[in-house]
Length: 236
Image 1 (cartoon, helix red, strand yellow):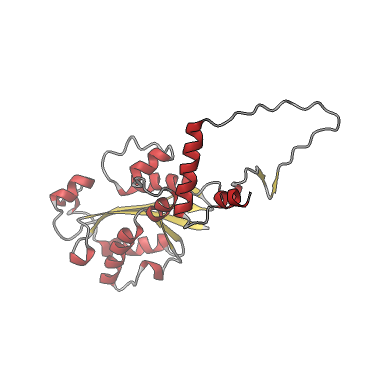
Image 2 (image 1 turned 30 degrees about the vertical axis):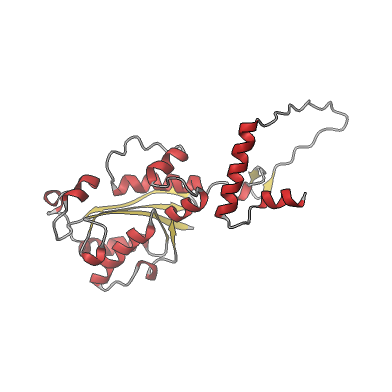
């Protein structure tokens, strides 16, 4: 499976009010492995860059005025993303801006060229309801080093988001604890008559029990009452 992790920086929040893309970056995942393929461009937005936007990403009109227009980079961007699943944090924002730029050029929409879009912000909210789910918070939660992130930057943010996405979606097929090797699972059998090794049992503390109950409650809320563990407790 080919996926593209994508991010944009812009002059503001509203493409329908004339805000434009000033930076776009994308990295490629193939079968959940980050490849060495990158797409990164700074873009002349053909308008001023408000001071509040420049404070976020550090890109000013003076810095961007000699960069190519979006129309100049659109063909290579399309070639890079075509046919891949798009991954973005707060995807409606990034995809909305790209759709606006595409519309100016008669190129349709992102979904005309890519089969689907994954919004990692939506995914994070489902996994961690009630918690902060911005990129910095997710980096902390999944132990992704973001210490070098002082400003928003499209290329760095795609690299961080790629690591976060893989961490968020890792291990879904081994929830019951089976170790996978190739297509099967590892079985450990004891020789008949061999002495059994005593198993040390550690009982959960009251604090651990309370945290466990809260985690189940969060899962039950996020899954709209479909928490399997709670259902099994009721049945037992």
